Image (cartoon, rainbow, N blue to C red; front, side, top):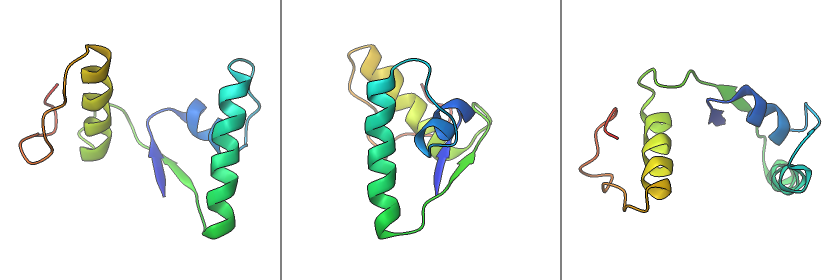
Amino acid sequence: MVRADSQYAGNLACGAWKAKANRELVAHVQSLWDAVAELREISWEHVRAHRGHRWNERADHLALRKAQGELPVPLTFWKPGQR
């Protein structure tokens, strides 16, 4: 199960929607999705952003730290909601 806080990204990844922009990137993600689907069942689920979902909060932390050029807090010390 893949969880995403973007319905747009989830539906593009699994091929339910067609991309209007970033078509090359979306095609690459869809090819990865298809490769995994050949090996095992795969689906995705929408989770609401900033609602305390531990791994969604961790993904936000990692993305923000990378965008700021900073290293992430190691998982052993990180707490949900920590930016």
